[in-house]
Image (cartoon, rainbow, N blue to C red):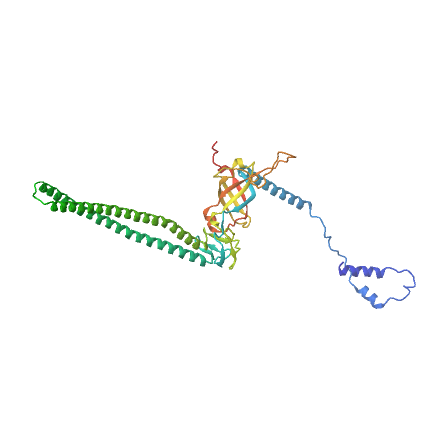
Length: 402
């Protein structure tokens, strides 16, 4: 209530005749009467706050709202007739990527961890190194054994050359012995004829026979020397073959030791970003233990789970529009790569069994893989696991090849 209204009411109360009583018999203070009489009286009052608007204005507002609603309905109908009825959409879609898990092949203690979480790496960059003392010793031992075997082969090759020389010498001795034997045989034949005519003495004949026998024995010895030299050469060749046969095994041991040493350094298998880092210096790791993941963001794709009632209108090559929940102001065009051969329930660990009991039909969903354009994937703002909304334009679906 405003101040003028209170003043007017007080004036009215003071001018109203009072009833005789003990309390009113006392004289009223003069100051209060004077202040009440002299207060100005206001006859105007403020208009009520809930005064209704004129009927013409209300009718104008209703007509405007109706026009706006009609235009909106007309726009929605036009959009549905020209575009909406050809689109199928799902919000059960996510960004996916096939990432690599980094795990050691050998056991050991972690020496260094050059990798940092969320760090971009290139293929071949060292991410984790293990202590390599034992691996280096094994490699040195394998290389030493291989070097010894190769030196043994060189020694045997020298023996093989000497055996070949021995064969040549034996062959020369055989040639010389054959010449001596031929000469001795000829002399013996001549002395036999001479002895028949008493032209040669019996002593001379016996000497010729002894010489011929000696020459024949020397020839046999020379031929035996060839046989021995050839046998020795065969032995040397066998030793060489045996030594050479051991080289591949020793080489494999050397290569294995080198590979074990190389495996103490875990490198990035692909270009990507390090994630899920779970290793620190001094940790003891075993073969197969998960240390980190390398996520190749450039290979991202969309996995949209469309209803089975929508799959008929989708084929590889269908154009889609992708809206990312994390970036409301960003969207991009993509294409369908392929449709899963079965629904997600079929590939689950415990597929549903509807052969018994009550049955409630549930619309199944099939994963549809969508290719992300290279420029969007290389930009790096898509992350696996992000939720997206996929809208497919069935007018772009290629003809079905039945």
